[in-house]
Image (cartoon, rainbow, N blue to C red; front, side, top):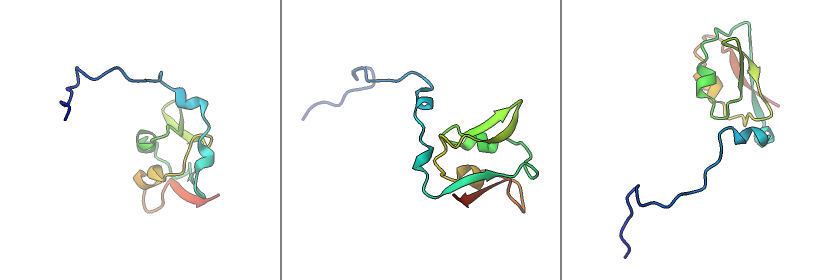
Length: 95
């Protein structure tokens, strides 16, 4: 049995430069639902922006402006984390 390596002994691995995912439009991976923003309810808390694993929440001047559907995979995390109640500023709707 071989000895386990510590982190200093691991060989270098492949890494990619930052922001390489921008080149790949992954929005067509969505499974039937997409987030819809309701600006009249939005409080611009930016929790959706922080929570989005795909960086698909668009922002200008510190305020939400919508979604980048070319990269949004429709996971629904933004809608789940949205704190506005009773109505949500982000809802998941069928495409």
